[in-house]
Every structure is written in structure tokens, then in C-alpha cells.
Length: 381
Ligand code: MG
Image 1 (spheres, rainbow, N blue to C red):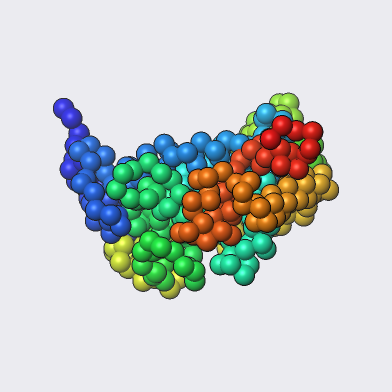
Image 2 (image 1 turned 90 degrees about the vertical axis):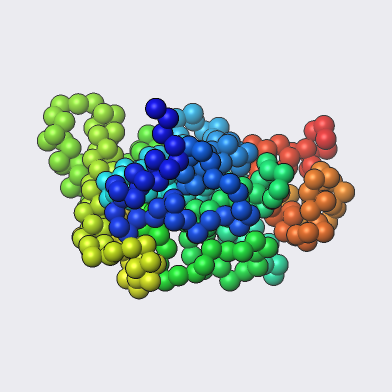
């Protein structure tokens, strides 16, 4: 028997929590489309994101570590997949809409520049008098404007709910497509996606940091949450190699954070009877317990000073910043060097925005190659 979309929607009505987002009750797409015979609106969003060009490019974008430094480290694609996995677990356990949470995480980093947050800072600075630059907003530009796949509209024409999750917060800037309605609280799925992103990067950055030798185990003893989980893991695992012990500590840490988030959120949403009451809630409904919140914050601070500001990471970051600002300057001063598909966008988006979109879409390696081709006289153009 074929399960149709109507079956799936009926299952959602029955199975999901009253405060969950239901595909059948979606606020819809900007351009009307006939519903799919056997995929819900959010499943379709997820698939559209997965099949986009921007999604494939995530593989060659840095999270923290420069890709050529080692094949074991996370890039933006593996970060996204780990985040999506965590979001599915949280959403499923809380009887929320897994498809929506997954679609949001899969799309959340599409707007990231090459070279991680360094690239974002450079573009934000260069664009400060011309509308600014922010990676959440850029992710929305990608799905709303920059993907070219459909005959009837620009972008992917995703549902309001997925777009709301991508946008995250406030939108004091111009956007040519109607934005999702602003409410005090987004869907629970959007917040779950946000937390899943954070749980994913905190843990994989720890993992990569230890494996690369940039972080030392002794330093981590100053982090309460790590200390606690490490001790538990040593008891649970018994005699094992350091590699297994590290891996198992990360497993336990993810488990600890996810379990706490699920339990605390379950407490907070008790009595929330619909998605409308979620949207009007002044208090944050998804979150960690105060104790784990403090622990997670300490861990994030540790990563910030010991890993993200590690001198070797900073050296790579500075090179990335320089590459992007020089690319921007060359294109701005001499648009004749840009490919025609970017120049044709000048009229619609203005030269600065078209250049920023072009640079933001580059992978790390494309940006490095392009920089060499443009500025090294010995390189072929
Ligand atoms: Mg992320």
C-alpha cells in the first residue's frame, strides 16, 4: 500500500505534540505550489535543501580547521549532518516535527562564507554601509534568491516555517521576498535546530581539537562538565585506549546535553496547547536546565579561548580574512574581472551585494584558487 501525503499528515495530527508544527497547517510558500502526492511540505523543503548547489559546497567550507590540514576534521557539511542527526533525535523524542527541524539544520549554514566566521567578519565590515552581512540572513538569501532551479520563481520557495528557522532572529534589513511573520517565539522546531547546531559544534570541535593536538586533555580538567562526564566515562568504559576514552567521553557529553535539553524542554512546554501559544510565548521554551546551561557555557568559553583563539587557528584565520578582502577589492575596483553571471546581478542587487553574494558562495579552495589566479602574475588566469 502506498502511504500518501494525506496519510503522513494524518499521522502528524495524531502522533505529534499539540505544540508541534504540522505540515498540513503550514503557513505555506510565497509562490503557491500544488502539494506533493507522498511528501509533506516540510519533507519537500528538506529534500530541496539537500539537492541544492549551496548544500554540496558545504563540503569544501571550513568549520574551524582548514580542510587541507587533515581529512579527519569536520567541515561545514559534516557539521551540518551531525547537527541534523541531533535535531532529529531531540524532535522525535519531544514528539515535535522531525522533518521541519531537520530541514532547518540542513539549511542553516548555507550562507556561510569561506574560512568560517573570519569570512563573515570581513564581509560584515566591507558591507557595513551597504546593508551589512550576516550568515543567517545570507542563508535566507541562498534559499530565497540565489539558488536557480525552478522555472517559476527564484530560490527554493521553502515554507514560511523552514525560512523562519533559517532566519533565527529579527530582520531589520531589506529582503525582496516577503519574510515570515515576526512573533515573540519561533516554532519549537526552529529552536531545537538552533540547540542541535550548538551541541554538534561544541562536541565536534572538542573532538577535532583533541585529535589535532591543539587542545590538551589536562586543560580540559578546568571545565566542570567535561571533568564530570570524563569520570563517569572512565568508570563505564574501564580499561581502554585514550582514543576510545576520548570518543566515549564525547558520546556521553552529547548524550548528557541532549537528555537534559529534552527533559527541561518537556517541563517548560507542559500546558502549551498549540503552535500559536508557542509563538506568543515571551519565555524561551527550549533550553537546558540552569546547571547544564552553566556547564555548557563554561565549555563554550573554554573552546573560544583555547581553540578558536589558538595561535595556529588565528594564523589560518588571518590568511582567510586577507584573501577575502583582497578578492572583494579586486572585484569592486574592476568588475570586468567578474564572471558575467555576477555582473548581470548588479542591476537587481547592486554591485556590492552581488559581489558579497558571489564571495559568500565560494568554497575555501575556490577562494584560494581565485585569489592566486587574480593576484599572482605567474598563475594562468
Ligand atoms: Mg552551524
